Image 1 (cartoon, rainbow, N blue to C red):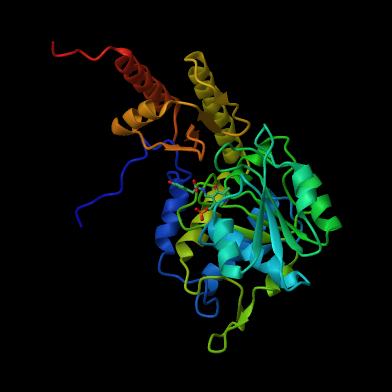
Image 2 (image 1 turned 30 degrees about the horizontal axis):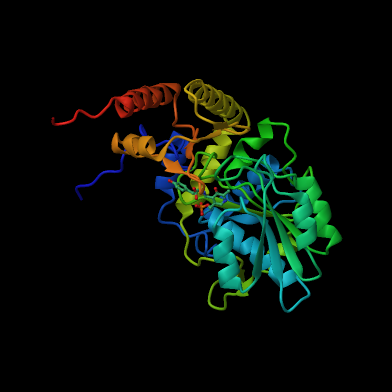
Length: 361
Ligand code: 0PR
């Protein structure tokens, strides 16, 4: 094999990061185990219990249940599936802010539920009035995002819980990215703050575990039963996961990362990332760009398309929001030096763009 994985030194818009060294080791140690068959691989199954207990602690859940998924997509699909199973209707719908991740579109497609997308306000948080107007007797689930993919915003979760439960629906919080930074902020986002039923919270994003390690948490073990199918020829009798065979690497690395970092390591990482985001927002604002204020470590700015393309051409791994803003995710591998070098390139490329092109005559 000739190709090696690329370094993270120019990766600015990814939600993946360099795993913690202990998480890397644990992933390697457990990569041939299958927590999908706990009768054969009891050690990794025991580790998964530890992973859920730790995730529960982070997410304010007293009697945690759930499992380590392949990622936020699987956690979101399974949350919609639980709600669909619970709903007493033949035509269930799910209400989601426009800031919701596209994995819910996959969920709606696969599960045959109607997805009702409601607008966000000028702070990129869900418009509660629009949610109220969208729920009805067929609403199975209301979705709130705690750390949106594009702007890092946190929806008003307690209010969403009230609306959902008044309508007889469940509440799912997508904290796939935000879940490992929000404990260090004063946002209300978790099971302890609000009537949350299910949550996506991914160790393989801000949790610094190796991929694949997503997390699905549910308020009570009975909710997982909605997902269970019989497994006749395995020693365990049922399986709640979407995938069958799955990597023990994700489970073990999630535990190793959380044991190494929760809470102090994650706290100092959050402070460092948030400071970097504030520094970057400030640097971009000083240069005249309109910046979406980083309430979590994610910065969006309206850099022109030509500059964006030039920065990509210079090797920066950057991406844009649906409306075209540059978005930078201050993941653990994103250092101040990287950001300073990025701003240096931005300055050079902007200067070059403003120099008149020499004509031939
Ligand atoms: N929920 C939220 C809020 C997310 O941001 C994401 C992924 C998901 C769910 C889905 O998680 P999985 O991708 O683990 O299934 N957000 C990133 C995105 O779509 C995923 C990503 C990660 C993209 C790394 C690029 C990348 O290099 O932007």
